Image (cartoon, rainbow over all chains, first blue to last red; front, side, top):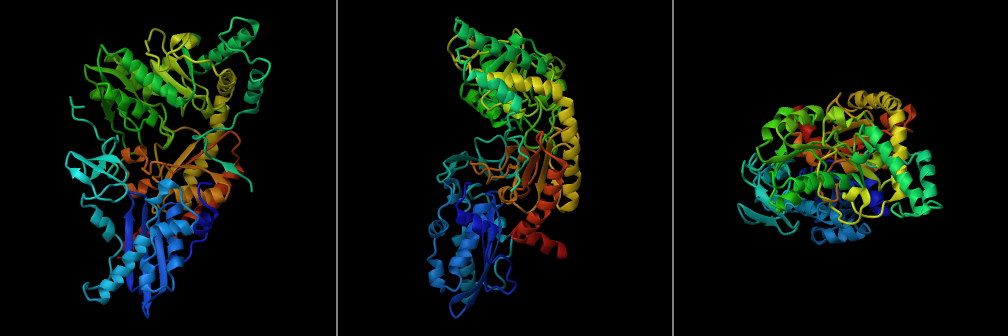
Length: 200
Length: 393
C-alpha cells in the first residue's frame, strides 16, 4: 500500500464529512485540474471552532488530509487552528507519499480560508454569505496559475515556468490557459497542442 | 478476502503452461543462445521456436520478428529506429493524440534531433479518422504510428485504412498492438503495416518479453548496438526463459483467441450495460462496439479515480484509473483529455479489464460493490453538492 495505516483509516472512515448550512465561515482550495478540491465549513463559538465539516473531491490522500485537519482543529481557538500547517497534518498522518505532499496536502489551507472568511465577515469587510462553491475554481479561470499546483507562474508569455513543478508552461491556443509545454494536449481543455505547419 | 483481479491492461497472470515451458531454461537449458556448443544450441533452438510461434500469432514470417524486453522498447525501436533510418528522406512523423507515452515520448526525443511531429486529434470515442491522418501528412512524412487498440478506453482504431492511406503517400506505418495482440485477431498483412509492437504480459506470458514485427526489407536503426543477436537489430544476450514463455503464450493465444474473447465479451457487456444503469452520471468511455473484448471503461462524474480505485481495492477488486492522482506525474490522462472530456470528469476515469479467470460471480460482485462506493464518495464531493444545488434551481 502506498499509504500509511492512518491515512487509510481516515480515507475509509473520514471524520466530519458534510455541509454546514449555517456555517460561520466557508473556505475552499484546489481545483479539479489538480485532481483535488476541498471545501471547509466552520462554526465559531466563544473564539473556538465549535464545529467543522468538509467535503473533498480527490484522491485518498486528499480525503485523509481533510479528515485529519478537521479532527486536529475541532475545539481549538482560531489562533491555534491558524497555527496548524500542512506539514503538521502530513506528520500526524504518519507521512504522505512525496508526490502527494504538494497537490493533496491542502487541508490546512482550506481550513484557514474558512477561518479567514469568518473573520472577514465578523469585521464587516465582506458583505453577504461566504464564498460559494465554485468561486475558487472561477478564480482559476484567470490564466494566472500553474495548472498543477496553482502556484505563481514565473516569466512572461512564451517563456514561463512553474518553479515548484519544474515544468515549462505555455498558453493553450484553444482555451488561453497555461498548460504544460511538453504535453501533447492541453491539460485544461484537452485540445491537441499541434505545432503550426512548418514549425517545430 | 477473495480478490477479483480486473486489471488485465496492467498485467495478466502467467499461464501455468507458460511457466512450465520456461522453467527448464532457468535450470538445465541455461546456455547462451549464441554459443556454438550443445548447451548454447539447446537455448538457441528454443528462441527460434518461440520466434516462429510469435510470427504465427500475427501472420508474419519468422525472420520478421525481433524480440525486445517490453512493449515500450518495441515502440521505441519502431518509432526511433524507422524514423532515423529514413532521415535522409524526410523528418516528419504523424501520430495519434492517444498513443502510449512510449510512442509520444520517443517522438519527442526525435524532435530534439530535428524531426517534427504532428498529432492527429481523436473524436469523443478516442477514434482516429484515417482521412485526418492522411491530411496531416506532408511530403516529408516518413512514419505514421497509430495504435491498434487503446488500453485506457479500449477503442480499436481503423489501422488497416490508416495504413492504406499512409503507405500510398510513401510513409512507413507502425502500429502499437500491445493492448490488442493476443486478445483480438491481428494479421500484419491484413493491416498492411510495416511494423507492429506486441508484449507477452498482455496475453498470459511473462513480463520482460515482447516483440516487434518488422516487415521484410524495412530498415531499422538499432537502439542497442551490440552483437549479432536478433540479426543485428537488437544487441544483448537473449532472455531465453522469457522469450520461451512469450512463444508459448503466443501459441496458446492463437489457439484460444475466439474462446477467450467470446467469454470475456459476454461478461464485459454486463458491466458496460449495467453500471451506467445502476449508478447515475456514469458513462462508458471509448467506443462502445469497436472495443477490446475484455475492456470496460467508464467516466464517473463528481468523484476522483484514485479514491474509487482504493475503495474497490479495500473490497478486493483491482482496477486501473487514468486520474491525475493515480499517475505519479499527477497529470490527468492525455487520452481522456484528447477525447474532449473536461478536466473534472477526466479525473473520474476507471478501467475494468477482464482476465481468463474472471467469472460471472466476479462481475456480479463488482455490480453490487461499486454503487455504494460511488454513493459514499459523492456524499463527500463538493462537486456533487454543487451539481445538486444547481439542479434544484
